[in-house]
Amino acid sequence: MSYIETHPLQHSTILRIYSEKDEIESSPEYQRNGGIWTPEKKQLLIDSILNNYDIPKIYFHQYTREDRNNSGKVYSIIDGKQRLETIWSFIDNEFKLSDDFEYQDDENIRLAGMSYNDIAQEYPKIKIKFDSFVLPIISVNTDDVDLIEDMFSRLNEAAPLNSAEKRNAFGGDMVKAIREVSNLGLFTQKVRFKNNRYQHYEVAARYLLIESSNYESSKLIDTKKVYLDAMAKKYKSDNLNLVNTFKQTVTNVIQSMETVFINQDNLLRTQGIMVVYYLLFKKALHENIKINRIDLQEFDERVKNNRRIAEGNYEDADFELLEYDRLSQYGTNDVSNIRERFRIISENLGI
Image (cartoon, rainbow, N blue to C red; front, side):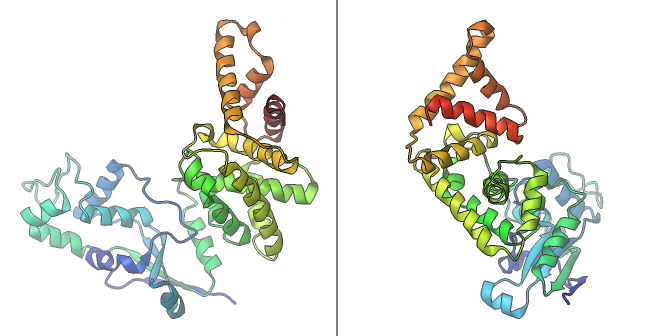
């Protein structure tokens, strides 16, 4: 039977953890992305440490000796990535204390607006106090990484994890396939929207859902959270060959898309269009039809121009293009919406 054990990490001062940060994996697969805290939130954390406030617990997964030999890492962060990255970036002088910072131990000491280096030069004892602050780190030992992923999901249940971040914590074969698809060039080079909250994972999951539902029922279904989550759970294990088949089909379509779109393509500016384009390129591949970017660009311009025409005189506008425009704004994960937009763009492009 699998086990999971926890205990406080000894001697976990800020300076020690900073000195060992190369031995800490900050982005295990179940983690959400870093770098999304506001400057004000970062400053508040450093304020709390300097003024001796408690901060929330940080959880580390302690690797086995074998895992250490393979990865060169001793720990990975289960929860607390943003806090650690904030502390490390303060030490690296990437931001300063807020302009209204007050040092509560001695109101005569003015640290407002100071960097870590400023404090080290002007108030070395306070710098030592900061370095010696003991971080509340809990070490987790387990023989089953799925328990780690489950723990991460549970720890963040009260935090604003979005659907893609929660799904990423499920683990398993399908989640791994989602990650791998999201690393293809379409996402790393061509799309304009960022992946700071796993937006690329979300689109990749929708593509795989199209293929899994096609296999199961030969039908297109809603690409909503409930169906994406169900897919990730259903194909978590024992269906690796099927998952790889879905992934290969998706990869083939994506590679076709990559030859048409340019880097940071304005046509790929939102997630809402991505499923429609996928279906369009899949159909073109099946029927051996070549899609060129000029046609897609011209269609996009016709939709925009038609919107302007409707603003001046609604009766002069093309109804189907207006409907495509409307559907592109609302309910883009509804199967009826996807089908209708796919029909309109297909007919306009002659595909």
